[in-house]
Picture 1 (cartoon, rainbow, N blue to C red):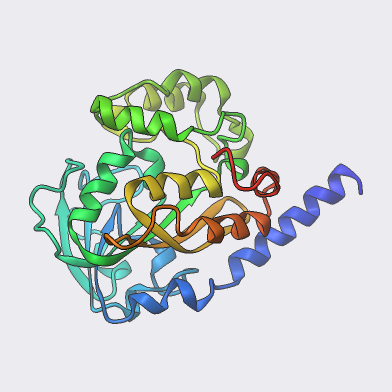
Picture 2: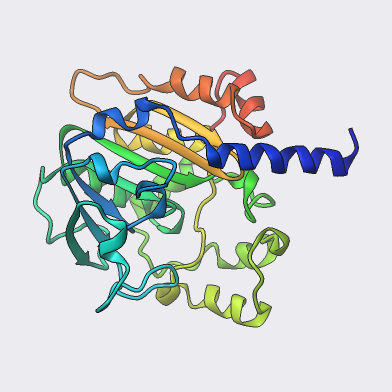
Length: 285
């Protein structure tokens, strides 16, 4: 097949993915529960989204690091109410530890395209676990690096994420800015002024636009397993998404008990890097 033909096929497959809802295993555990969304509200979880879980949940509170970001305006007359069904509380909170939220307050934490913007994801995940009831769930959507402007970068290894946690890396960290400026594929991004685009990334402690880390299906699963998540369902989708549902492990759950689920998802992935890793037995991740 020619290059043009292959690109045409990929575009058709991507459109098909975006028209198809995810299977019920991603939504069934969220019916009637109390949720907290980090970085919400998100169109993917609302009516008409691929994971329309807002309407089936008892309540959804949201956390944003600022009232106005490049993705949201949550001030007076904001877009918070129309997206979040049913409407919950909105917390403007620029602290990964979520100090104003009590322990065991929610049945599930939701997150869509947030984890890559966090400099210390294991610290954030520790807080998400704290505010979730024992045995509660995590539903996360993250960009697959192979389908995004990050595809020229290296996969972030688990060792680096552990080092960020042990080092106490904070959200003003600029470690990955130079790499982003050098390797970003502008052809896969929306049209932008290159000077302003670079300035936004150098000002990341204010803008929060940098993707600190890059993920594949298996590397995202590895991060969550380290954080104490048992993976229940996962699917990589064109053009650039990983959808993952997990449950916080209890004392009797063995670490890595969701690894087979991850490897099977990698085998079925539209992204070659996943399929190659699956043929290697799921590692390295």
